[in-house]
Length: 385
Image (cartoon, rainbow, N blue to C red):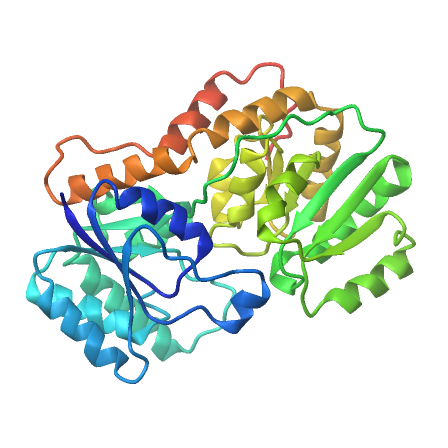
């Protein structure tokens, strides 16, 4: 079996599904920079880490331990995530590169909305270019990462499209003959998530359509501000703040809704889009969400220009008159490419290809499905981008 070590910042319930399955196909070990943080526990996360070998770095000697592991495990293929956020991982990647050990990076593109000093930008580019010249590959979380790391010097043949994935139950049967339309937002109540854009876009539709409801699921520092705005706009009775739902029940809640709206100003991926599609729920997402890669415009959802209220409103209107049964069927078809066994097989194929053990370059299964949906797009209501 191919020996693989994956370096991750901390345990997460959504990565566990993938790691357990991959561990049946390769000799897998996961190294975590730190244990689960308190803010993640408040969101309902829990330490799982079952079905595969793992190790958490000692916080008292983290850097030394990471470098030591990188030096001693030269016979393994290393996949390093979080080189920008975890200094110990940056040191491990540099150690692997200097030793000539096979390694790859698993990364999102950085959020360009975050202000960084000129020195930090120069340092990131220098480190990225150095890594690009030595890495065997990069698992690029969405087309944003493909573009960003390609610009840093990664060759196209080194880049493997990837994302974040979680196992979900098959979409439960849901009646679409309810008396109202239930649109939902799921996420933190923070500026980056674009809730203000959504509220401005949907307000006229709520005035025009008596059976339309918006549910906001999540918590965050903007909650009081949102409540005040709903009252000022006179839509507080039509917008429900549901708070945080347990992760175990989110799949059913999404399946019961008609549409998920993800209006983010930036999301490296947005795993809730995967979960909505697996529940058979179409998605409207901004073009600044990495997981918009999963959406075929007008078929399983819509993609709008981030912060463009009119464009989002046009997509909402289009969905309201679309054949929603066809869109739900397309969402389920898309989710077939996001199932953990399918993603695990693709990941192993990527690792084998970058190791020289497989001649044919693998194609991301979700890209194949979205391309097929696009080819067979007939009879859907499409809003031009």
